[in-house]
Structure formats: structure tokens, C-alpha cells
Length: 147
Image 1 (cartoon, helix red, strand yellow):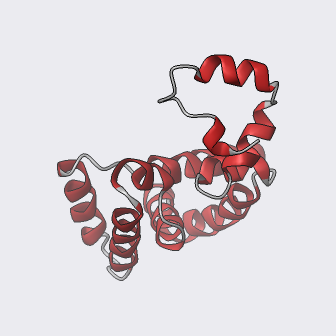
Image 2: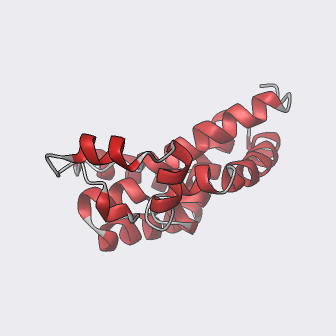
């Protein structure tokens, strides 16, 4: 079974999914090389747990909002967002990662705000990275991080 066997563009996708009798985890494992959320499922949320540790550190240094923003930017700088890659291509996803690297160089986060506006204007949403941050926040709350 390969990830290409399951495409929502295929009119028979639902039948193939049922006939394939794959678990959600098995399907996520098929997609782990090109979808960072699927990779989380396939690796027992390894990166989300790593980001939760980083998030705790950033929040303790910069406060809640800036700590979350910096953690998000670092995550985006490290790994191109798979939602942007799926919608706009790998090149655009890498470009957005470079924007995050640049935004991190500005201690005031003004470049991050400009980046946010630019992405909104281009209808680009690094939503897969945001999903990882949401998971990291949840893990942090389970670990008793208080704001």
C-alpha cells in the first residue's frame, strides 16, 4: 500500500479506503514523508513533545504570547510547513521557512508581524506547523505548565 493509492481526488477514494482496511495510524505512516502532522502520528508525537519542552523554556523567558510565537517561528524555520507545500509547492514552503528564520532575528517580533500580514495577504497558512504548536501546548498543559 502506498500513499498515492489514497487520493481525495480519486472518485473511488472512499471505497479504496474501506477495502484497504488500513488503520488511521497505518495511513499516517504512509504519509509521514510529506506531511508533518502524519509524521507526528507515526512517531508517537516525537516532535510535539520536543516542541513542548522548547515552549516551556520560551514561555519562561518571553512570556506566554511571545514564547508561543517564537516556538512557532523556530518550528517553521526548521521544517517547511506541509500544508503550504501541499497547496503552493515545496519551493513556497521553503520560502516561508526562510521568512521565519529572518523573523527570528528581530527581537521585537516586528518582522514576525509583517510576515503574518504577508502570508495572510497571499492566503498562505502554515497550518501544519500551527497544529504541532497546538499539540505542544496541550502536552505542556498536561505537564502542568501554568500561564
